[in-house]
Image (cartoon, rainbow, N blue to C red; front, side, top):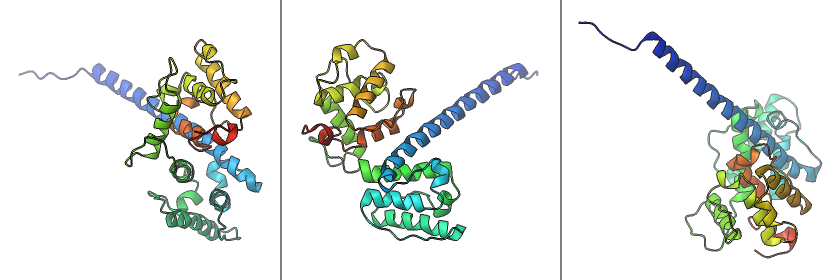
Length: 259
């Protein structure tokens, strides 16, 4: 009896499609990491500026632990010890001082060791900075109407929904697609400063124009630009950081309006 199987050219096509799919996934991952690195670097530098320090490459400039310790000191107001030597042992010790400090603050560090940061591991360095952002800037969100079991992210989403309720054509359902056209950013600013944003104009402008307008106005109000319109606003992480650069009541202290 003859046996039939897939023709060789069919298998070749499937393998080609599979490879193309994997290439797209890898490209997306690389782009995501690039965007996160750029955004996290800006965030770190905004805080290090207070102690006249600066990082150029996030993966390289945290390796000796000094900038990491300085960042934690600025964020917490505490003074931490540090090793002054330049040998690998001293670098590992400094990073460990930072990690131990975070653990004392009940920060959960998943699979992040001192040698990961000292060796400039991209994935774990990004993970460490995101953990620090969550602890120092996002975890303390409190919003009217929140429930006890809500995460910080859920509370921030609730706050965004409350701030933009009643705005025609504006719907806040998530931290990705809902923000792409820039209307939400403008609506939040308009909520506090209607004199600075023309919402009728926002409804007719392109997404890029809306984003440029929102970020430009926010900069005038003292909210640093952590995002660029070229696609970065689509990243959930960056939206969270942008609006949590200041507390969830983002323009509260800047504009003088209560939440």
